Length: 284
Image (cartoon, rainbow, N blue to C red; front, side, top):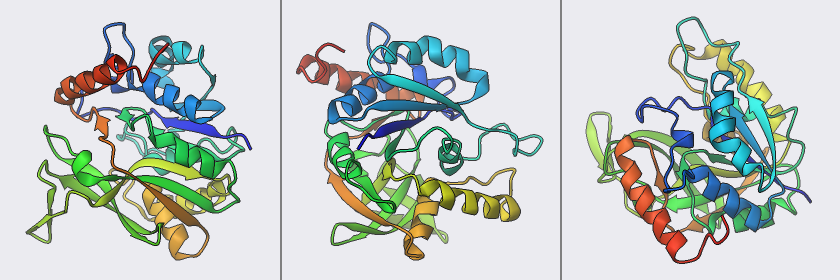
C-alpha cells in the first residue's frame, strides 16, 4: 500500500522570528526538511504533501519545495484561513492543518512538523505499520522528554500514557522548562527524563478526516477563536476514548532536534553536520 508524508509547514514561527521552515542549517543552504524528507523516502514513503499558508507559498517553494521536488513527488495544500476571526493571524493548529488535506490525501499517511528533526530511524516503523494498516489503526513515535527539551526556553509537549505498546491518552502540557518542570495549580511538577512524549510524528489512516470534520465543528462552536488551538493529539485522544481508533506506540531513544527558538540553531547545525560527516546522508 502506498504511503504519504504530510508536512505541517504553515506555522508562524513567532518565537523564532521568521520562516524557520526554510532556515538553512548547512553551508549549502539545506534546511531540516531536506533531511526529514530524505529519511522518509528512504523508509518507503511515496509522496510528500506540504501544508503551507498562501502568503508564504512563493517563498517556501523557492527556498525548499522546488529542491525537494527533485527527490520525491510533491503536492501542496494551503491551510484555509477563512474561519479565523478578525484580528487573529495565527492558524488554528495542527488538527485543522491535517483536515485541510482531506481532498488530497487518500492513503495512509504520516505527519510531521516542518521545523523538527526526528532522526534517521524514526520513519521506518511508522511506514511499515501504515503499509498494512486498516482504518482506525494509527501509530505514533514517542520520544523521551529529556531528548526533546530546549536549553533556550519553554516548550509544549504531548505527554503520553501507554499500555502494552499502545497509547491510552495524550495530554498537551505547555511551558515545560529546560529541566523538565512545569507549573500545575501553582505547584512545580518535574517530569522524569524518560517520560514518553509526542512530537507530532503520527501515522494515520484516511478515516481520521471524518473524525476531524466532526471535532472541528465542535471547536468552532465552543472554543475561544481568538486564542484557542485545534490540536491533533487532543482529537486522537478523544478517538481513543470513544473506541474509534487504536494507536501503536513506537519508542525512540534518539535525540530530537528542533528550532523553536533562534538560539536552537547552533545545536541543530552541529548535530546534523555530524550525521552528514558520519555518512548518514550520502547524496543529499
